[in-house]
View (cartoon, rainbow over the protein chains, first blue to last red):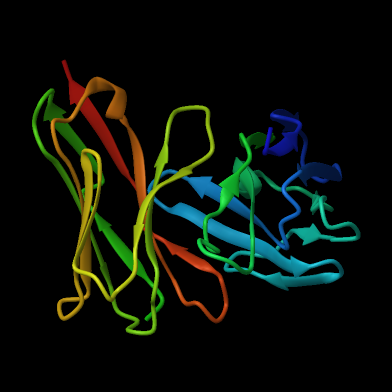
Length: 115
Length: 112
């Protein structure tokens, strides 16, 4: 089954404790992206990657890191989480060519609470 | 310039009625306009999309209307059903950079 998986689904942590949210896709997609979803603000892009070893900042990258060492994986790293990073996080992937080439496939989300 | 403005923030429609959600944009370089549907506890999923060379696209009960001169597009859900209750996001993209610019979302509730 074609899918994007994220782990963990729920995470409660304390300020300053480093954490990683994993994301993996099995569709051989070139493009991967991380979003955060907050009420009234919709989806805001944190980072994206158009290929292995190629990453770029989205609209809200402060406080986050990513890496793309393999095509299928795109982990999101919070080196020193703060309460304002409490949010619902989504990983997404898509192809970069073909038609339709823009459809983004989303993971199930990770609910992060930083106390 | 990069924003997509979506309205209303929430919408309650009776079963069998027509649900209408509107979006407006400024950047005339946008060339792809999708709508995503999100159920509680799930990630968004592509519902329907349109390109600016057509004024309307219909898939079952879902229709996108696109007005290029007004820089607006809307989603119409005909014969709305309780199973359509979800959050709907409009978005826009420029082909050259693949990034989607998202609206804030509309929470739709269909009353039985």
